[in-house]
Amino acid sequence: MTPSRLSRATLSGVDATRSGVRLPAVDPSEVTVGLVHLGLGAFHRAHQAVFTEDAAAAAGENGWGILGVTQRSARVVEQLAPQDGLYGVLTKGTDETSLRLVGSLRDVAFPGTDTARVLATMAAPTTHVVTLTVTEKGYRRAADGGPDLTDPDLSADLDALAADLRGRPADEPARSPIGLLLRGLAQRARADAGPLTVVCCDNLADNGAVLAALVGATLDAMPDGRRLREWIDTSVRFPGTMVDRIVPATTDAHRAEAAALLGLTDAGLVVGEPFTQWVVEDDFAGPRPAWELAGATLTPAVAPYERAKLRVLNASHSTLAYLGALRGYATIAQAVADPDLAAAVRALVDEDVLPTLVAPDGMELTGYRDDVLARFANPNTGHTTVQVAMDGSQKLSPRLLGTVRDRLAQGAVPTAAARTVAAWIAYVRATTQGELVVDGHRVPLDDPMAATLADATAGPLDSLADRMLDVRAVFGDDLADSAAFRSAVRAAVASLVTSRV
Ligand code: CS2
Image 1: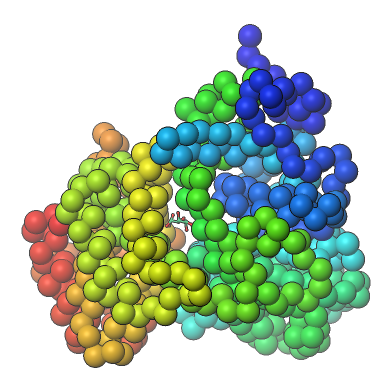
Image 2 (image 1 turned 180 degrees about the vertical axis):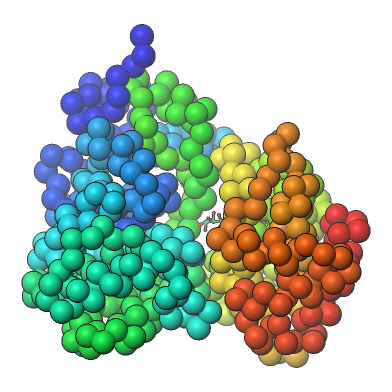
């Protein structure tokens, strides 16, 4: 018999003592929504939603339920709505596995059908915080950091926002996260519902400031944007954050494993490593969950943490993903077990990254590097090279090019960082030429700039590095025009495409 599905009704039948499954820390029937999350992917469910639940439980507050909003499709709503928002987090350590259920996700919505409800919730006086995990590409930023007005989804949203700003709110479904956010802010300002804090939880350098600048630049470009801009300046804060937990894509094997522990099926299951960290700039416009009671660090200075995490963890991750996939490894754990690849990552961190970092309070950076490599070696998450390799055109800048710029400014040639750039170039070339096979499957290039990148990789190998560096939307004019960087990348590409490491 197939087991029944997780829901509030079936939750009462879960025997926590016998199964070892941890029940929600909050009673879902008591919790009301106080936070809207845009980008209801696995990462949010395994990270901020867990912190928020634990914080609410520790503080004894029941007003921090989450309305989770999906991005492109209704699939996550279909997974979670029948489960009353309940789902499990399967934690896969090197030596042990555990399952906990989360009850803080109180409502789910898909903008394609539920935009009005999402906007109304963002404008409710009981809502105090909006969080975002919409991935690097979700922000639809142009090369200058402002809105990419050539993006059809964003421009449709800005038309709707323009109608909102003229006092005739549009009924259109929002198509981009930034459009949804701006329309929510407009509705909140109109409703005079009080201050709001918008917390960017994506892996962007200076993520809070970047989002604030994007919102401001978008309104500056709109004929009727001034009043909303002024309201935002006085009523909305955009704290920066550093978020960290390795969250692989959930597989059928994970779902079967969780169902065996729980005795119920869970279509919303997410998976994570045991490690989890959240550093949040303590700059809120109004109330917030007591995240510090759940282990988060609230600090006035988030930048050193964010920089260390992006430049050490994420840059190493990408390096392993590209080099690993090129060597045919399916997982990050396999890639880091290859001594050549581990050496490449150590060289990157030691030679180029560490000289650009200031250690955050209480953190020792070589120890941090070793801890990160040990986390990558966890064989049980099953985190794939191809998952980390996606969207390289968006990821390279926040995780690697800051290091490159800082090293050049120090008068050094960032040879090791150039090797990671070369690894990305080789990966882009192999995927766009249909030459990359991992685990018996041909891997396509998964990147919003795939067409431009495919054009740049087509052609003779000896000018491959130059054609790719001329993709200025990725490298910026400064790096595209840096002779030192260009020659380092040329040399690294030449050695990589001939030797394959
Ligand atoms: C990864 C990150 O997919 C990727 O690009 O580098 O998602 C990484 O797993 C997280 O940032 C870890 O916190």
